[in-house]
Length: 173
Image 1 (cartoon, rainbow, N blue to C red):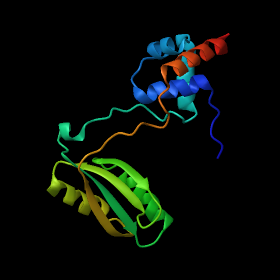
Image 2: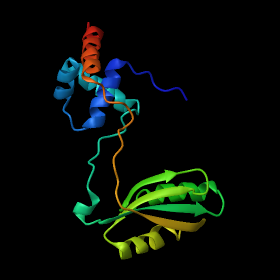
Image 3: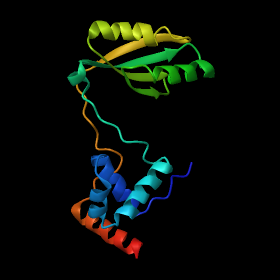
Image 4: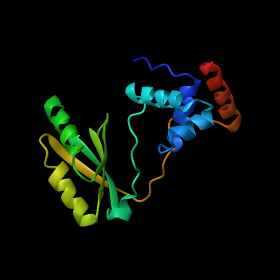
């Protein structure tokens, strides 16, 4: 699969949104030296092409009553497409599931979940994960601490940001 073509302005927009997805179009336009309408069109294009998949709130699970987070490794007895796809589609919609990863190796899925406590976590795994057709093993690992990574794109140093602004202005001309 060929990655979509992105120019310097697109990359700088992605860098800025990666740091703060709530930045207004006006602030993005100002930082990039673009007209607001041009900037809004660029952001819309990134979304339309599936590069920006959405803007979501990063909620602290513990602050809303979900004090325990875990990764649950799921293994299937075989790889029956209908069972794997049903698991993916159904489990992704269960409240408390933060993310779902279909993986290779000894584990077929990693499910990132949050629960109010250890009893609720045990019940969640038994009621929503381990009892699914084809599932033969569920192994739960508690998450003691999570640290957000740097993101996909390196943050542009000030000089690069200035250069991107200059490139943006040239692109408008």
